[in-house]
Image (cartoon, rainbow, N blue to C red; front, side, top):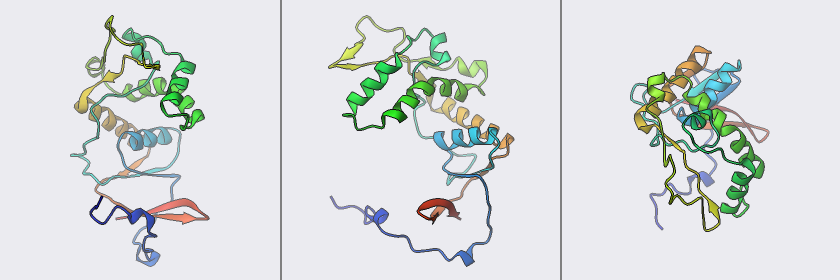
Length: 208
């Protein structure tokens, strides 16, 4: 397939930026590129733990749109328990995941996700008001008598929370606010241009 000429740019070494042209330098514990779900949550957690944090985001702060439909897959949260969603066996869940990926996924990472994703979801929605939390509903709950517990040897799990794009954005923005309250600094309308590496490890980023 012919592309727009940019499909192989990742293979090429970027032209080195002259460090003498850098107008301002910062030294912090953590620089996060992107303030979507992952970047914002990482910034909030790190800042709450006392790290110095800078977040770089291309979008405008007021108009930022967080990608996604507000469906956050996880298992065994207190939120799910309060909505009558059945508890999922972690061993079964991880084994099922490994089957789906032909055992190519990182077992330890998937198991860590399975053990912590429920608690993480509860943490994520914690800043929302009770009225806002009540707008989140569990999908396919209660289960239909025809709900397939297994299909072709793979398990199916109901109870994924759906909060919709608008409330999802509010939740992310709430975490951004908490991160800022703990000292994290967000630079919107800022583009990361090049990573800085020292001894084959990323140690910084040049932005504009």
